[in-house]
Image 1 (cartoon, rainbow, N blue to C red):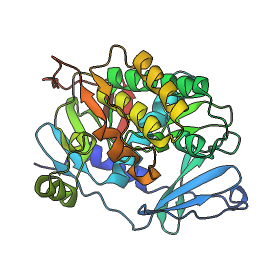
Image 2 (cartoon, one colour):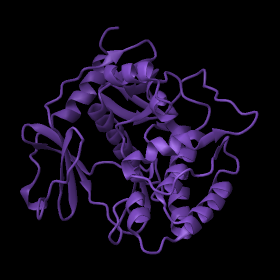
Image 3 (cartoon, rainbow, N blue to C red):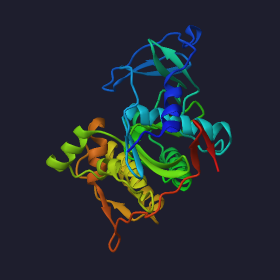
Image 4 (cartoon, rainbow, N blue to C red):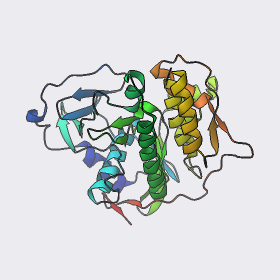
Length: 319
């Protein structure tokens, strides 16, 4: 299908900032170990994420969808959330990851974002793994905040988070939760007034998924061309990930009670935990393995794509 010029221009403009990243904001920086294909610099106040390779727009345009690489999905998604925050379509308490600015670093674009940290914890995962005294009230607050944001984004743009685990819930300096990690998401936007589903393009992952037959619903969601009728799966997965990471039987029992409360109207429930020992990198796999559809429930898809987000004339707006 032919290129959608306005959309291409919009993304290209994001990838070609004119201003260099200011040196004065890069104090006491370090680069964490990461398997990401981004170079990450964590400084006193800001975090800089820069693709390791200079990227060109390599999209696949279907009749009702657009596929793109993870870095470009992250860039596009953060640009949408930046716009929604700036124009107050997302309220102060509806927190989702977005850049503060896009600047130029090493001949490529870099996303400059505020550094996240509450006490000594960057994420909900870090809190669970490293806290000497886990407070269920904190976890309940953070999950409720994320669930609310998921509901708001689903209502606006049929949004699904397809990597739903505790590591993707960041904690800001005020002790509030931020929904993060936006390179594995799907959603709907209007391009030239036609609704299009945005999702990841990756032949390797699709082949692995097809032939190895990985039983991980969050992976299969990444290539679904139509949204599900609700976001129950992501919520159950975030909750399950929290439980799977915890190795204290008493806290785990409290978390299961919390899951009954938070997932009361959810179509999924969480199975009893099989092991108390779990590595953080396995949290999503184990989380998905412990989620079960409730009796007489089934996964249904929406037949119609809809969104309040529009990209026309190489710019974004809401209507």
